[in-house]
Length: 223
Image (cartoon, rainbow, N blue to C red; front, side, top):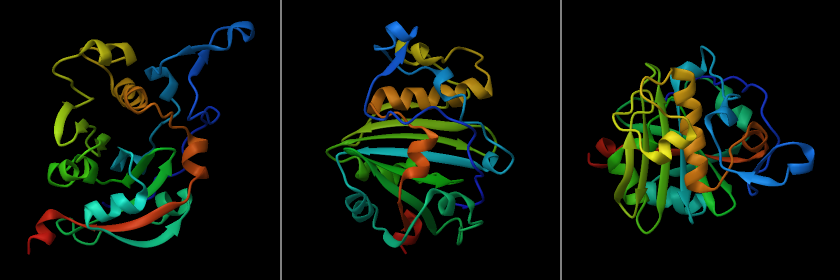
């Protein structure tokens, strides 16, 4: 991954990663609802953040187990600000990824600044063995990939910026033919929340400690 500065994310809602979202007037605020694109409008990229990102959820594995499956090496423990604001961390695009990993309840979350490890089939298929992986990637050119794998089998695989087919589940979060860039980005995070049951918010991201990890690419491993 190329670790360029991601800048601070714009204001977000309160952290509620383990509870359903609520809607309605104060008297009806306990009514649960599922995530939709509007819930992630806060995730607004800037020129630096426009270099791209990838957020990957791995169910049932702690970060150390994720590192082992990826053949990676933990380098240090860092904060969100250190992860996203420390400049270029890429050392040869064909050889190595640098990622941050944290734990959110029974899921591990991999965060990449301008990286695509989470949607690199040779790495995430083995990572999904016996479990589920949900990855949301967006490149500098605006194109991306949303990937859901269960035990090596593809459940969902599409470009959020230009989905060829819109399923009922995708439509429910805000995907539609001719979707604009901002809505496609927000809808991707909403879909990830529905699939994982984990609400991602800025307070969640900045409150965590991340295992800063180096992972060799498959081409490096095979040398």
